[in-house]
Image (cartoon, rainbow, N blue to C red; front, side, top):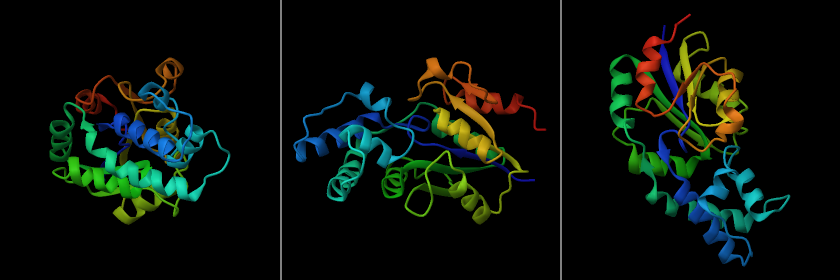
Length: 218
């Protein structure tokens, strides 16, 4: 039986809020919007994908392609300020040695995701990396995750976990019949998530290994 762990990226593996905020504000300034946002503002908008975030930031009901294309370019450029959370590399290597296959499945735009993984997380032995694209609906819809699992020869009946920092990640885990791990240090609204029904909660990435060892497999 396979063992695998699927990770969200923003607020789970890396602190990326600074770059996301900068990309939004740069785009708004370029197109002469009056709105500007703090990192705290942006935290409340992320989780459902780039288009959802951009609509919230521009206060529009539909995407203007020219603006969104500009934002995507800014988004890639500003990701260099992102920081990997403490304990990520050590914990992922420990999990790999314990036989877990490591995967990223995120609502972050696929191009920006791959750029950031190559820049900051390339020394990790990832089995598969996928961000959001037009090919699949964003999380918590599990369609893209099921496709990924099929390509990797993985099944929901294997020992599988989904690790993320928001209610959408917990829903993604449930929709894909995986165990859910909620990160309490990321970008989620944790007042609303205090009573959420998930399998494991962690206060730091370093706790992941310890919690998995104790979690019943059946």
